[in-house]
Image 1 (cartoon, rainbow over the protein chains, first blue to last red):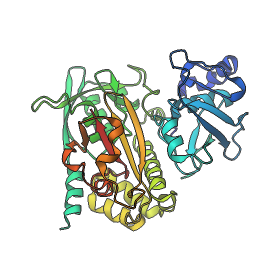
Image 2: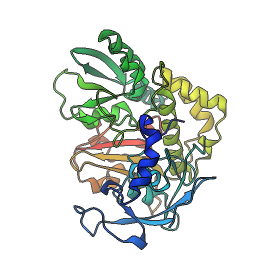
Image 3: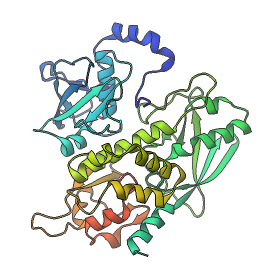
Image 4: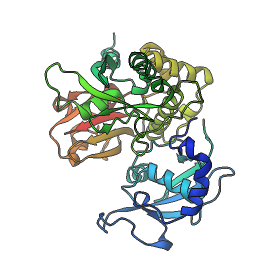
Length: 134
Length: 266
């Protein structure tokens, strides 16, 4: 399966070094942070906005992300989660699954997905570099 | 013929007029509302590539824009039409879109799903990505309907191919047969619905229960009050007369091929 969000093919070779150098911090678009690093990266969003709990689960040999639990703004989309994972884990591509069943489209909001598909108030997102479920 | 089936087939065949511009050239087309834009991309790219002697149109991914807005091709064409054009429609003027190509412009990968670039000398393969997206939408709606995605996950290879062929060739009988064999819609837990509000610029996914707490059928109008809109459309039709209908009935009749019911609010 072609990747829903893949880095530029032309810059693949250099992007690894680049992301290594950039490491963190994340850009504002990927406003995602763990409870341990409670820093609000976006300025124009009111502080009262609703956050949702998500838990990352690697599939197969995909690297683990630490911590696995995050509080994320519900307005964020799957697309920003994909970017965050690719950057953090230095992956070229990433596939995200909800409930180990389906890949949400990148424009789905975490709030919607959390409301519909949460388990014990957490949205469980499995991720892997190669396509996992047919 | 069963009136429900007749209506479903009518909706399947419904089409919209579109004009696509690239430079000084134009492509006029009639697209099925229930289809997806990239199913037509190869043909459109070939047309403009020959006309304007621009071979990169076939070898680099293309996308369509309404003004400055790239069109999210993971939505059925009819939903895109209602979102972008329904309220600007003027007489018989077709919906006018601009063709863009990676290379001349940067693919808007933050807002729309990208396609892989082909290896040197080959043309872009749009179909695999489209099919993956449709299958995942079906798995997602199946999860809402059933509480799991097994019906789609366990489809045989033969049926998966038949489903894909039905979508590509726009063959309603084949689509219906394949879905019927794998998916019984008589027993549903909850109904997958997507609501797009144009004034709020928002997109909400709902999972509606077909029955209320008192075991009465859920009525469509009661579920849409939070959107505070008096102009709601399903499949391009103003829903004023449907508001008192059971939501289960509306979903059965007006859902798209990914089994989601799409509602556009103005």
